[in-house]
Length: 239
Image (cartoon, rainbow, N blue to C red; front, side):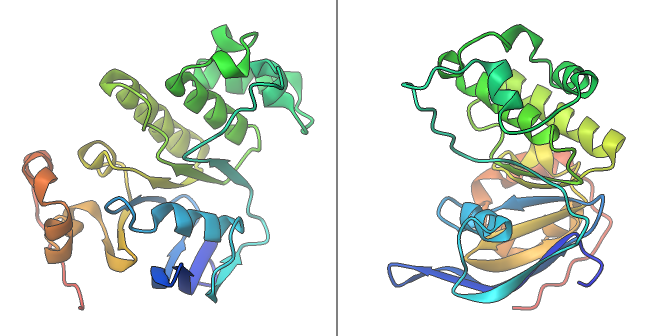
């Protein structure tokens, strides 16, 4: 794990006496794309927040590379409606950005038409794009996305995932993404990490699809997933 951009080692977290994360360990290398999946309440957002230092684990260690540059879009972003701020001012808030880079990033995410809008008037999908734009303005080499497509319709989801895929490929930016849209995101992933308080399985998408615990957790989605892939790999999981 010493060459990883970020790694978790034996992370444990409890809330109200219940185990949220149980001995979770994994590492994310430069340029990798890891999709973090699991049922509701599995601890996915908690793991993200532990990795980012937003909450403290009860035990275990998070290690970050010295050259890590993080961009983050949270699952929920609460806007204070009593503080009027337009999109452009929000993007520039507390950071110095060269005008050329700002314009380039705004063009990449396609939010030019929203710049003068008040932040509180944005739809859920528009806000997600603005949050992604702000994350990219940090020039990240690791983009952490917590359910970025949750407020979008199907067409919006596909556009956003295509944008994230392009960012990953063109900017060689590592991505750690929490998602429920398994059949859309798994193809882009270099690894899929299936979490249910502990790591049920981790591996390449075509291998994960053969894992017994994964099949049990996502039984209702397996028909769609199996139709998407042809399998040529064996996967062994130690229980």
